[in-house]
Length: 402
Image 1: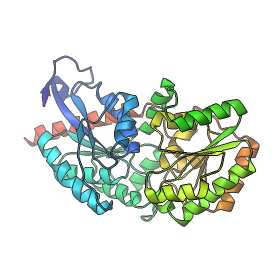
Image 2: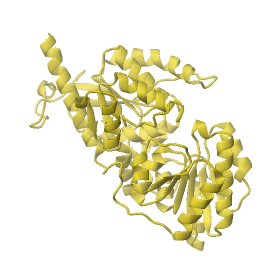
Image 3: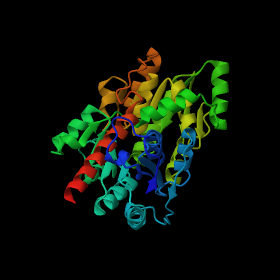
Image 4: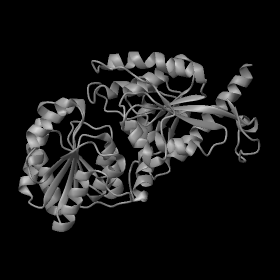
């Protein structure tokens, strides 16, 4: 641990601050959504003299984590190289666990923070728990109640909940779900979702489009006055026939509305890419591009008249801009957007998707901005406050035990 100057702690400082010792909090990120949601926490932790954020890139999605951190002026502090050959969950977790275990033993962090429901999050929670390091679960309490949907995310987050020391729930509904599972109430804190913090940070920067496809689309929309429909499709349960139906619906929506252009950042999975290109390539108002970096995604989302998606993150982000969302899934763990009237759960039936899109586009529906049910852009500060309380309480327990 690194010594820092005495006297930097405020009036609410704990014994750790008074002793002027800097402890590390490992922030795990293996995917772009994880990186986006831990970035505001890293920035907020930098303001606490006795805690040091250490961003750990698990290697799950190489390149995407680094890209997501750039707009925040951050980069991974630790990278865990992985060799993946078959891409299975078992291969990933079994490779991650010994590397994370070695990292925890070597660095001796005060806490491990994991985000959401990925294999990185599950492996990080297990490694921390097995070494007696408190695990903080960011975005805790999301539930569908169906272990098969989404798979494997629902199982991952339920398993993490059993061993986490701190549950950072994004909404009151998520906190209720945790309490219904008999988790101790004092370990559950409603913080808001840090993705709203990230969105606010990036939107405020007003960066120009980097993607040549998005830049070209913007020029055409500006010249012709057309409307944008942002479409994303990446979840494992969407692959195959469900995706065929969604893509058929997207093509039909464009054909039915002559001023509509669709932007579809295609998933890097080769099978998904082939499916998208086979269904949509060649249409003059369907723009297929590589995955957008986060500032470009925010630009596209802000400009959209409608979003058609199976993404969880976009369900959380679109309400900030008042953009209606059709969720092409059979269930969602983010019911707050549906309850607030920002999203409609429409499944993957192409007839229903087309009907709902027709209604939104024909009515010119635009929803209120500034009332995102997932947060107010101040979640990271609440997360850090909860971590300070957790670690202060743990310090007192350790002193008492000694």
